[in-house]
Length: 516
Ligand SMILES: Nc1ncnc2c1ncn2[C@@H]1O[C@H](COP(=O)(O)OP(=O)(O)OP(=O)(O)O)[C@@H](O)[C@H]1O
Ligand SMILES: [Mg+2]
Image 1 (tube, rainbow, N blue to C red):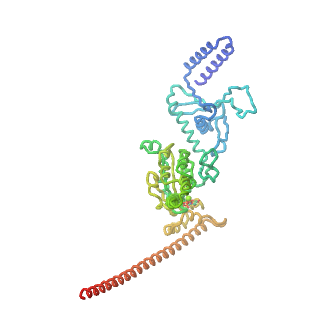
Image 2 (cartoon, rainbow, N blue to C red; image 1 turned 135 degrees about the horizontal axis):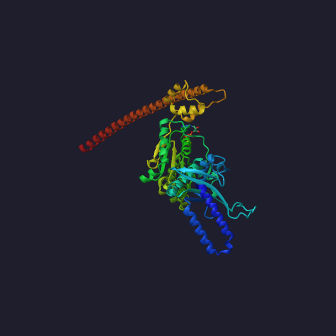
Image 3 (cartoon, rainbow, N blue to C red; image 1 turned 90 degrees about the vertical axis):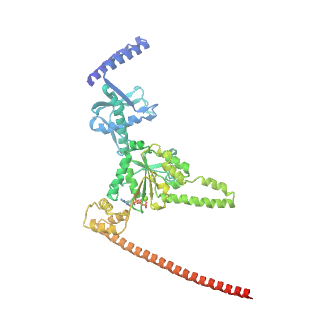
């Protein structure tokens, strides 16, 4: 059927060609009327609708987002079906070459049982002109995608199918792109470039949830939480909450907090914005940094307790400054300017859940700390930090993951002994991993596991000794305190005795005076 319409099209083209030959003999108004009429007749009989998506929107300044998304969608679908493909290097993509259908190639697609035709087209508006020195050497070429479908499916195609293509294209683009790690630290050379406050490198961290060593149930719980968040656009808008989530990762050093951030970024396919609070001048700059972070991103503040300590020091400084100002009023102006370059706790709270933070949606913010108890409760209350995740010492589940990562073993006779030792002593996954790593090429799995057992036993012994020492010290302190209190009581008793004797002495002398 479409073939028939194609032939009709050629017929019309012939008519138009003949018409152009004779165009000189007709006035332009007549020509226009004839053209419009011919188009009308063709449209009346042609049941197919065509939509074109040009490569550039407006004045060829910006590549059309729709064209881009369609290209990616069709690349994913066409590379198996189209016979003529073109290979291109696409910026920020994981694969070095991206295949898409070549010019004038056509493929079919199906959506809800409706068949559509996509073709890649290229037209040259001025084929004679050739300028080898032109920067835009293909400026006369216009590319576009043409979508053809039967007019009875107009609603499905225009309302659902095109939306589906654009969304899927964008999703594939996000999945295939390289993750980036951004920093606001000016020493990383970012400032000045395009006047952005963030600079970035490609984020290539080998960690993933698969290689992350932790209790299996808790890992699954986190994965479920992240998945729910990712798919939660409608849910968040229904409950009237900004589409963002805060995670607080806390635990001793080497328990995998930073590794977990990398795993989350990879799982969510979000870029990471590593915010160094100490490098932020003031609250205004903090807000600017926030505005520059896009949706589908993770903002990280590592070791937040240290940054908050800074805030504490600032408060202390302020008091000192006020004292010094009273002594030397000239200092006041200097201090005024330095006071303006400070981030306050309220600025940080605003950063996390002020109205700006809700813009764009789909944002994650992660704090890490070794000392959760040091943090201001306002900073980590639910709603700001929605999920608190404790990264603890290595448990048996975590060890099994590390053994699989480092030694490629899933079970071994020595696992039982290791499991018992892990319950009896505390060792961070970082230390367990270090002990599991073969020190030379001769070390086999058994030797590595024995090394770990030795380390765990040593650790257990050291911990027991430490505990004993601490208990002894505690006992000594208690005894000392008891001795001191007995001594104090004795001193007080002695003082009391002396006071009583003095009072009695004073009473005697007064009685003597009265009697005299
Ligand atoms: N849970 C874990 N799973 C896998 N590897 C881990 C884990 N914890 C630690 N490691 C290993 O130990 C190294 C240090 O871990 P990481 O930097 O994630 O610890 P951290 O909790 O962020 O420590 P800190 O509090 O000092 O920042 C990592 O490079 C990783 O190889
Ligand atoms: Mg860390």
